[in-house]
Image (cartoon, rainbow over all chains, first blue to last red; front, side, top):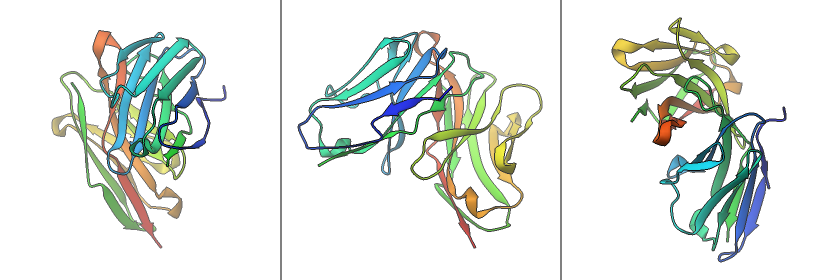
Length: 114
Length: 116
C-alpha cells in the first residue's frame, strides 16, 4: 500500500479564497483523522471519522472549516474563506478502529494564506 | 478521557550520549501507548507501541520505552544518540471517544537536538 496520500503537498492562497485539502486513507482502514500542526499550538485534532461518519468535530476551529468523507477512500477538508491564521501544516491519518493499533500519517499539506 | 504529558518541549544531548524523553499519561483503563517521530517536513511515523505483555518495548532506530504502571510513565530512551535522531517526538495514548470510536491523544511533543 502507498500509505496515506495527501494532496496538494503545498498550497499558497490569498486571504478570502476557498481551499480544499484532500486525503486518501490506507485501504481497509475505517477511521480517518484530520490534524493541524502549528508552532504555537502543536498538533491539534480537528475532526475524525469512523466508517465515513463524522464522530467528533469539536476541534474544528470555526464554521469556516468543514470536512467530508463521501466514501471509504476519500476525504476533504475545506476552508472557506481562508485567513492568514489558517496557515499551518494539515495532516490526515488513518487507522483501524481498535485501541491497540496505530494511526498512519500522510506527508501533510503545508498551507500558506497570504 | 485519557491524556498525555511530555516533560520538556526541548531536549538537547551530545552525540553518543543517552537520550531520555519523558512521557506520563492518565488513563482510567489499561492504556495502549505509542511513540511517534517526526522528521522535518514529514508526517509522523511510529517508533514503537505498548499494548500488552512485556513492559519494555523495542522500536526502530535503537529506541525503546518502558511501561511503568505504578509511575504512569512511558519514557523513551536510546543508549547512544546519533545526529540522525534530531527530530520531534510525540507520545500518545489510545482513547475511546464518542460512540466508541478510537482516537490517539497526543502530547505536545519534544524537540530533540543532537550536538556534535
